[in-house]
Length: 150
Image (tube, rainbow, N blue to C red; front, side, top):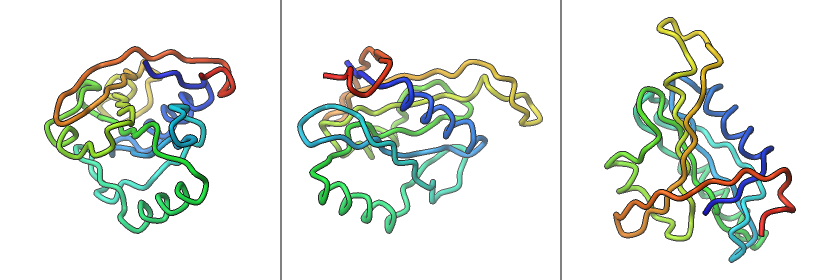
């Protein structure tokens, strides 16, 4: 199960809506071995695409160095789908290289009208474990604060 603070949930959703119609992507880091998503790190989608995301390699390297210096790891790896459900694509599954991470997908397909205007429609926010190509959906619990995560 993914336990995530309301503030972090809101930040991920806001990033997904802000980058629409392109896919948004980022990481939520946390103390190594804790499974606590604490530090929200929005990233740039280097692909600049509505159907694909790619972390900028320089930005990603800097993030991993920073996490290493802070004794952190990626607890959540997130990205958005702009026109499809929040379920990992074949490409998403192939790119999933963090066996301990929660892979969060946010679908913004119902948030915008045909002209790209924000309709304030609902987002679909789902989390998965992806290990050796096997996708397992997990429950998401939104907590009031980061301190309430175990």
